Image 1 (cartoon, rainbow, N blue to C red):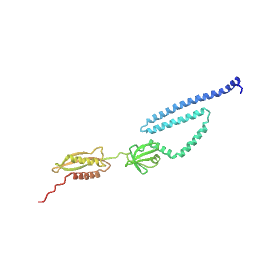
Image 2: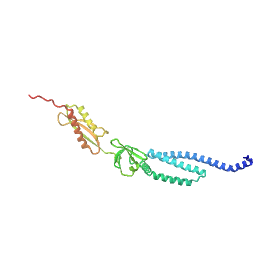
Image 3: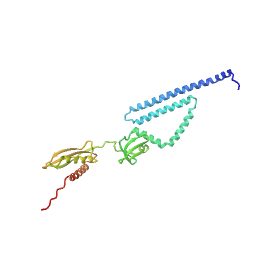
Image 4: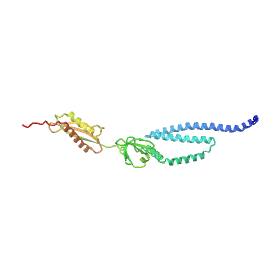
Length: 274
């Protein structure tokens, strides 16, 4: 093969020079667009999270979700701008991505419905962590709320995972939303003056503390009073219950204390007949 003429090399270089300059400028422009897009995506993420942080009671998970959504939106626009910088027609690419997104959305419509329901639950917050709820015939205490499912714990400590689509799409009972009205009551016990008062008080307090209806805040209290009868004292137990259960709770306490004192009282000694 014969050597190329320097004039031919110069002519070919002059032909390639506009293409090299054009592609070099496109490359520099694409790099600049990419760097600006990366910086702008991080900035938009931070601004969205900061703006949502000003809203009271806005969930941390939603702040990160919407921030990430804005970030990926800016990155998508950046990638399309970079491809357009190299002369690639992005219209057909957007159509292909839209068709692929539609196909993926149809395949994952159940998952996406759970995601949408999770977002609605996190925005409107019909219940919070620790609330006792009933949904779809399932009753439990809310332990975790994510974008896709809600975790409940039943009274017998069984984990229950409910998809958010099932939580949002049907009636829900929240037993912890409204505060329960408390009712105060008292129970009076007559004891002889010669009885062991300290032991009796401990028995009464133990029965009140062990009763499931008696609240620990405020705690049950004890007062000692005299009665009109001779040689008798009156031990007054004050307690608080949730709901209108004072009468039934007082009856249970009378029965429990009576049985406990009957067990603690020694049986009379037998005497031989004369």
